[in-house]
Length: 410
Image 1 (cartoon, rainbow, N blue to C red):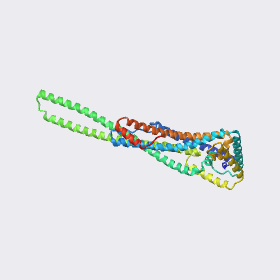
Image 2: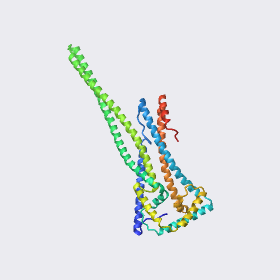
Image 3: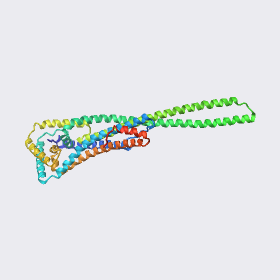
Image 4: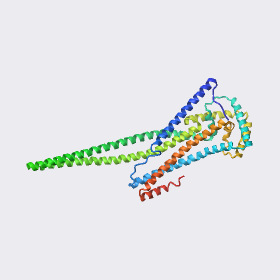
């Protein structure tokens, strides 16, 4: 079942131009999202390593557990992606089986597909063309109609999460910049204290020399000046030590805050990349820009479908050819046979088949990128665990205990 877009003459031309502009805008938005993901991946590739004091047992174990949790999250993502990757690969294998079909079977497939296309075109010509949906969107909805309600909800969730993640990344970036400036300020104060200490030492040395000269030359009683100098030196030294201790405490607190910011940045960054890849996949799958457009397009499709129910001309012939086509595809080993009813034109038009292959390859590439990213995250985490393991035997025991909870990694 197919239908064309609404509009004739100038209105049709205007709508086609609008569709092209929307598609171009969609491509620009997807390119911007991909560029932002690439920018994030350039920063330490997968995630930033935390500056953890490995001698601190609770801190070390907590860090290993965070690495374990990151591995488990990436592993779950890989399992989900592999399932969808298998489906897309199955579609490509089906195309290969169709191309390699024997001559008589290929002739039957072509004949049935051509009749289905001709009968469908005949039915389309008598319909009112009033539905705002592009051809790529229509094809996608026909292929994945059962998945759309669930995918709309998923896409809405991903988009809501994307807004939150953007806000979290901005806050964390601001917090990390603030903490870096705090460390610089603490180091500056500590440098001032060191310079003051040196100046104080020079002054005390000069005073001592002066007092020595007075005693040696004039035999003057310098008890009071000596006590005053000693008191002054003690007071200033105590003040310097107090400020230095305060700076050290501030530095420890600031570094802990930095580690916490890095930990949360790693989590948010991984969520961001996976979320963007999921949005890219779903929007590419249905040729839409967002969940709102997908919901609107799906509602348009359902309205058209209700009209199709009232127009049954040619249904019997289409169904007969459909059954023959499905049986023929079954004989040659095609697994996903039903989708070729909505893609019958691709069976007789090489250019259409090229588009189908391209669409599947694009989807598979996006899934492969997401799979590679999560595999890289697991590898980086495992490398970090190996680095810790090699430092001390007791560290190795902690790593083995944490890794035992992860299970086998693929």
